[in-house]
Length: 102
Image 1 (cartoon, helix red, strand yellow):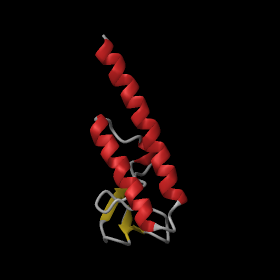
Image 2 (cartoon, one colour; image 1 turned 135 degrees about the vertical axis):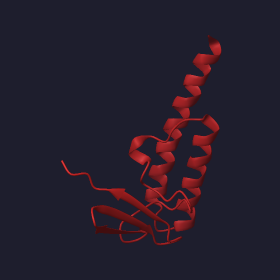
Image 3 (cartoon, rainbow, N blue to C red; image 1 turned 90 degrees about the vertical axis):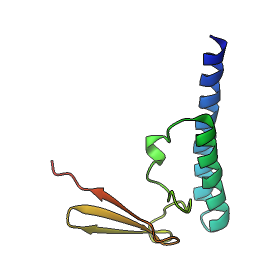
């Protein structure tokens, strides 16, 4: 019983730190190396605590180079053939999202 309580507390602390690190990365977007370092630490905390990334943060940074995505500075967005295409301007990684018709 104690272990379950400990795991819950540990995961809650990890979630709070993840959001805090993402906020710091966005505040320091002018210093891109520092912002990338914050995202890298965020990723390590997520893996260590064995939790999923919160939905609000899943598509907010490049998973290859850990660059926070800011349109125009670090991200290019295109809409083509029913898809939204995100391209990281640092590592040129492409991520595609299908536009669903309602």
